[in-house]
Length: 311
Image (tube, rainbow, N blue to C red; front, side, top):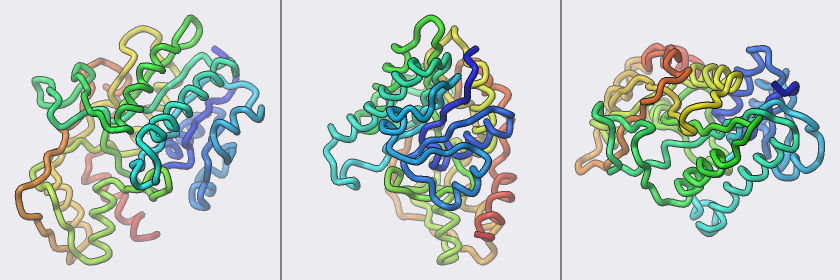
């Protein structure tokens, strides 16, 4: 195994900042890179080496001479329309960041590369498993620019593997946790955070799709398992994995659980017809995520809502 830190790209963001912390807590040397680290994230990562700047420029500057592995989470998830760029430019920016980081990983001596992909590769009418979830066996067909970049990224990551260099793509689903914030490249919050914010601002939660069921991964559980995964990345097996089989709740049940913890909150149901939403994700391939030990949504909300109120 190569001696050196784990590089985490996109480490100023919601998910990868927690991944960087999980690696640090596990005793791993970490280099965290992002275009911008806000003050709150900088404080949380105070014991982690953080480098701020555009990814390609940071990697070309020679400030990171050697790494043992890479977790590539840097991505533009905001739509091309919101950013005022073309679909082609959106795809290019995402794939350029990936290919630059793959090339850097090989030059810096890394023997492991984990690409964080997304549920966004799936369309609502893709064919689920017999259990009614999207697994690794489900063929993704979504065609938007972000979806296309993620699917292309999975292929590029798999194609970069060679003797002495193991690569794997990990698809993430719905995630919730503390410290979530919008940024230029990610101009939305998860549904749980949006519901909490609406309840705190107006004492109302509007549920647009009451019967929709979604998987919900508690971010500290996810990050800790990713840290374990990258420590011993499997060299044999599928090149794309799903990040476990987290608990599933309907949107209405999530709203009720939040309302129970924020007294005086009223739930308002949107009138039908309701939008279709993709089915929950699960892993159909045995992996370290079999032992993720997911925190239940209601137990996690007991931790999250006091933290939200304190902010």
